[in-house]
Image 1 (cartoon, rainbow, N blue to C red):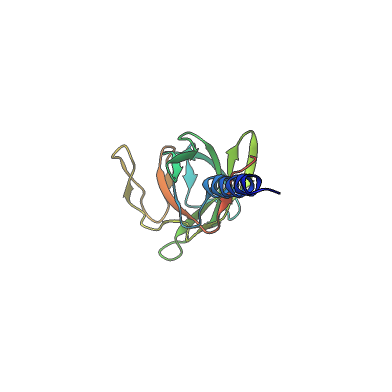
Image 2 (cartoon, helix red, strand yellow):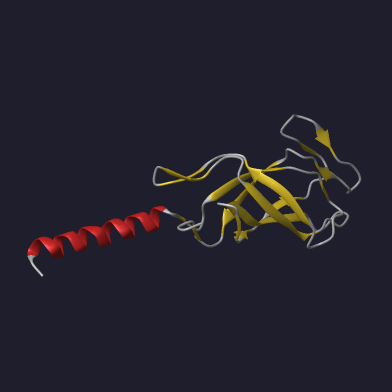
Length: 150
Protein backbone atom coordinates (compact mmCIF):
# COMPACT_ATOMS: atom_id res chain seq x y z
CA UNK A 1 0.00 0.00 0.00
CA UNK A 2 1.20 3.47 -0.76
CA UNK A 3 0.82 6.55 1.44
CA UNK A 4 -2.20 7.93 -0.42
CA UNK A 5 -4.10 4.63 -0.05
CA UNK A 6 -3.39 4.54 3.68
CA UNK A 7 -4.45 8.18 4.03
CA UNK A 8 -7.69 7.42 2.18
CA UNK A 9 -8.43 4.42 4.43
CA UNK A 10 -7.81 6.51 7.56
CA UNK A 11 -10.06 9.31 6.28
CA UNK A 12 -12.85 6.85 5.43
CA UNK A 13 -12.56 5.21 8.85
CA UNK A 14 -12.78 8.56 10.62
CA UNK A 15 -15.84 9.55 8.58
CA UNK A 16 -17.52 6.21 9.40
CA UNK A 17 -16.87 6.74 13.11
CA UNK A 18 -18.22 10.29 12.94
CA UNK A 19 -21.35 9.21 11.04
CA UNK A 20 -22.07 6.34 13.43
CA UNK A 21 -21.74 8.59 16.50
CA UNK A 22 -23.93 11.23 14.81
CA UNK A 23 -26.59 8.54 14.36
CA UNK A 24 -26.67 7.72 18.07
CA UNK A 25 -28.88 9.53 20.54
CA UNK A 26 -26.80 9.62 23.75
CA UNK A 27 -28.00 8.50 27.17
CA UNK A 28 -29.29 11.48 29.13
CA UNK A 29 -30.96 13.08 26.11
CA UNK A 30 -34.34 14.56 27.00
CA UNK A 31 -37.33 13.44 24.95
CA UNK A 32 -40.26 15.86 25.10
CA UNK A 33 -43.43 13.87 24.49
CA UNK A 34 -47.11 14.82 24.09
CA UNK A 35 -49.78 12.22 24.83
CA UNK A 36 -52.23 11.22 22.09
CA UNK A 37 -54.76 9.86 24.56
CA UNK A 38 -55.99 10.25 28.11
CA UNK A 39 -54.07 8.35 30.79
CA UNK A 40 -55.92 7.65 34.03
CA UNK A 41 -54.28 7.70 37.46
CA UNK A 42 -56.04 4.39 38.10
CA UNK A 43 -54.60 2.70 34.98
CA UNK A 44 -53.14 -0.71 35.73
CA UNK A 45 -49.38 -1.25 35.73
CA UNK A 46 -48.27 -2.33 32.26
CA UNK A 47 -51.01 -0.44 30.40
CA UNK A 48 -49.58 1.22 27.32
CA UNK A 49 -50.31 4.65 25.92
CA UNK A 50 -49.62 6.38 22.61
CA UNK A 51 -47.80 9.67 22.28
CA UNK A 52 -45.53 11.58 19.90
CA UNK A 53 -42.42 13.73 20.12
CA UNK A 54 -43.31 17.34 20.79
CA UNK A 55 -39.89 18.56 19.58
CA UNK A 56 -37.17 17.38 17.21
CA UNK A 57 -34.30 15.38 18.74
CA UNK A 58 -31.09 17.00 17.52
CA UNK A 59 -27.61 15.52 18.07
CA UNK A 60 -24.51 17.30 16.80
CA UNK A 61 -26.59 19.62 14.65
CA UNK A 62 -28.39 16.73 12.93
CA UNK A 63 -32.09 16.02 13.44
CA UNK A 64 -32.27 12.30 14.29
CA UNK A 65 -35.97 12.25 15.21
CA UNK A 66 -38.58 14.69 13.98
CA UNK A 67 -41.33 16.34 15.96
CA UNK A 68 -44.41 14.13 15.57
CA UNK A 69 -42.47 10.85 15.68
CA UNK A 70 -44.69 8.16 17.23
CA UNK A 71 -43.69 6.91 20.69
CA UNK A 72 -45.28 4.37 23.00
CA UNK A 73 -45.22 4.44 26.76
CA UNK A 74 -46.14 2.28 29.70
CA UNK A 75 -47.61 2.75 33.17
CA UNK A 76 -44.87 1.75 35.63
CA UNK A 77 -46.74 2.52 38.84
CA UNK A 78 -50.36 3.42 39.37
CA UNK A 79 -51.64 6.11 41.67
CA UNK A 80 -52.87 5.05 45.08
CA UNK A 81 -54.66 7.57 47.27
CA UNK A 82 -52.18 9.96 48.95
CA UNK A 83 -49.11 7.81 48.40
CA UNK A 84 -47.63 6.30 45.24
CA UNK A 85 -47.52 8.62 42.24
CA UNK A 86 -48.59 7.63 38.75
CA UNK A 87 -45.29 6.89 36.98
CA UNK A 88 -45.03 6.66 33.20
CA UNK A 89 -42.05 5.78 30.99
CA UNK A 90 -41.50 5.80 27.24
CA UNK A 91 -40.64 2.32 25.95
CA UNK A 92 -40.60 2.56 22.13
CA UNK A 93 -40.20 5.02 19.31
CA UNK A 94 -40.96 4.66 15.62
CA UNK A 95 -38.12 5.03 13.14
CA UNK A 96 -38.29 4.20 9.44
CA UNK A 97 -41.40 2.05 9.89
CA UNK A 98 -40.00 0.07 12.85
CA UNK A 99 -40.54 0.28 16.57
CA UNK A 100 -37.27 0.70 18.47
CA UNK A 101 -37.18 -0.28 22.15
CA UNK A 102 -35.81 2.42 24.45
CA UNK A 103 -35.33 2.85 28.19
CA UNK A 104 -35.92 6.04 30.13
CA UNK A 105 -34.98 6.86 33.72
CA UNK A 106 -37.06 8.15 36.61
CA UNK A 107 -40.17 8.42 34.47
CA UNK A 108 -42.82 11.09 34.45
CA UNK A 109 -44.38 11.36 37.91
CA UNK A 110 -47.90 12.68 38.32
CA UNK A 111 -48.60 12.71 42.04
CA UNK A 112 -50.54 15.85 42.76
CA UNK A 113 -54.23 15.32 42.18
CA UNK A 114 -54.51 18.87 40.83
CA UNK A 115 -52.36 20.08 37.97
CA UNK A 116 -52.64 22.34 34.96
CA UNK A 117 -52.64 20.96 31.43
CA UNK A 118 -50.82 22.53 28.48
CA UNK A 119 -54.09 24.31 27.67
CA UNK A 120 -54.29 25.87 31.14
CA UNK A 121 -57.10 23.65 32.44
CA UNK A 122 -56.79 22.49 36.05
CA UNK A 123 -57.97 18.91 36.51
CA UNK A 124 -58.19 16.27 39.21
CA UNK A 125 -59.76 15.81 42.61
CA UNK A 126 -59.82 13.36 45.50
CA UNK A 127 -56.83 11.25 44.50
CA UNK A 128 -58.16 10.27 41.07
CA UNK A 129 -57.18 12.26 38.00
CA UNK A 130 -56.61 11.93 34.30
CA UNK A 131 -53.75 13.18 32.17
CA UNK A 132 -55.69 14.45 29.17
CA UNK A 133 -54.58 13.93 25.59
CA UNK A 134 -52.05 16.67 24.81
CA UNK A 135 -50.24 16.46 28.16
CA UNK A 136 -46.53 17.27 27.69
CA UNK A 137 -44.02 15.08 29.55
CA UNK A 138 -40.21 15.02 29.73
CA UNK A 139 -38.19 11.80 29.74
CA UNK A 140 -34.44 11.16 29.86
CA UNK A 141 -32.89 8.26 27.96
CA UNK A 142 -31.21 5.70 30.24
CA UNK A 143 -29.21 4.20 27.36
CA UNK A 144 -28.01 5.46 24.00
CA UNK A 145 -30.24 4.72 21.01
CA UNK A 146 -28.46 3.72 17.80
CA UNK A 147 -30.38 5.21 14.88
CA UNK A 148 -27.96 4.00 12.17
CA UNK A 149 -29.59 1.73 9.67
CA UNK A 150 -33.05 2.27 11.10
